Picture 1 (cartoon, one colour):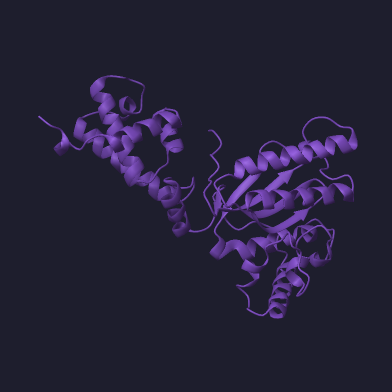
Picture 2 (cartoon, helix red, strand yellow):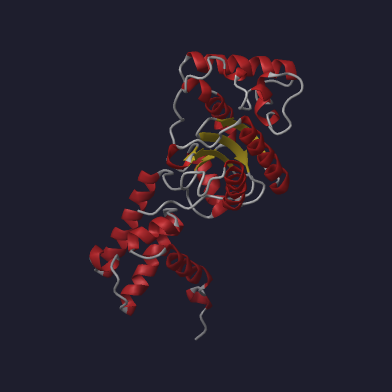
Length: 304
């Protein structure tokens, strides 16, 4: 099974985790950390990002950011390349600094952004480095608990505004929030599909924006709907499932297959990647088929 495509759209918020290649250190000095944050600020300005939280550990980095455009892949590719270039020049090394594909989970801001900043800021506590996460120098936690002189890199206001209107009260309430989470030993991510953190309504919002339901979103209901569509099509055309899902190019069978694929995409809200797996086709082939079905003239529009 292939990796799910990145879900990208304007205003998308992500939890991102970078790991050192072969679990090796990403930072060998505080200068490395400073350069990393300087680059983060540079990319924030260049691409109009919002940086809600960060935490730099020895061999990993946690980030929460929002993209202004559907360009997370472009942003991260450029950023990773820029930091890798610095690291290799600074330390006389070659090759990758980061491990493979970075982790990126889409985050529902309205319900999970506050919670996710807490998860990121508690990383030093979970790793046994600090009992008080706001004392850790290389995270954005202080930007939340300080009432004055907040770090310009960090967009803490959208999160803190959910707690109070007054800046002092915001800081007090966030500090209480972090202390409570630290006492509770809060060490795991919220339940998620492997692609996004949020509820069914958020998944539907993403579908409306991108045209595709996020993988893992209401999967049982979508699978049941797809199964019902296939059963109805098979019965109506007196076919068996093996032939429908197979590779035969027989004209009549291809027409039935196109109908089934289009209906599953339209009614069950299953995306092209999963449809490709179901029907043994590439996602691009499924996309072309759907576009053809969308633009085909309706029966009443055909002239005789």
